[in-house]
Length: 128
Length: 292
Image (tube, rainbow over all chains, first blue to last red):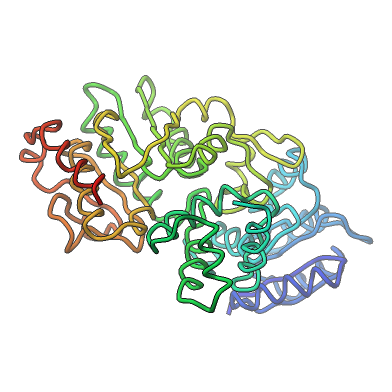
């Protein structure tokens, strides 16, 4: 089973994302900020990270930088999932090592499409 | 469609399928449900709504299917676009090296996602097409749908379906909550209104025809008629791309499937297809269709 770390300071978002990802057969762990997420990654890297940008303690962008420098940290697919929906943020995320980018609000179709895009789900995965 | 009918269908679809249409998706309902209503012998959306209100008719399933499984989004189904990039275009580039031009027809262009996906694919090929004349003709039945396609403006939701984020950044410009595809990509696509039941010989011949998820609305005889007419608009060495659930097998021998390339077809007997008089026997077929 593939693993996904959901990082978001909103427990509601984490719950929704968890439900969607579990339906897509991911094993889900949660973190409520970048620093918690980094601790989890130091123990065990997931296959994917669904990552909010703005969070207390450590934001998503800073977390990604630290994670990418861990041994094997280039492997996890990072999918940003944030209300930051402008080109500047998207470009910054991509050049910082993100694989995909979701602009909130999202739904199960967007999650499935983006996870297919980074190769974690079969192409043309159809939820309908 | 009256506002009341639209509200009813919105709620109906939400209850039945979870599909959540915003307040401005009338064009979507009309483009999907009008063919279905006609096929069921109904006059239009109004009568369809009455039927749905009447009982839990078999129409419920068809309506839900038409609205949910026929969504259009960028690079829909992925596979056909892989075929386009890896199989179709390499062959076309070889075969048309002399005249350096390629004509592509999206026969169910809808709100533009398919033709623009093809245009972006071609852009990504870069130098291989330098100096080529590229023409993408996108046709659809509905004027409203065509206007949206022409504008090339999509909601944040729409640009997140099937479109890799790198392509969004590269080929779109953000305008508030919406995203508009760049003028150079838009310029690659011509949008025209067309009913596939009517004569389309004036469009000329194409190297590639995408005709996905539209023939499912038609009965067998109509499908056969359309396939036969498509065969006259395709180059003898051209390609036809159908939807994943569609096939020519058992319907017509004008096209043959390509093994290991699902959804991909070629004209069957190139010389015979090319030699057929185009105008002479298109006319009686049209008369036959008009009389349906």
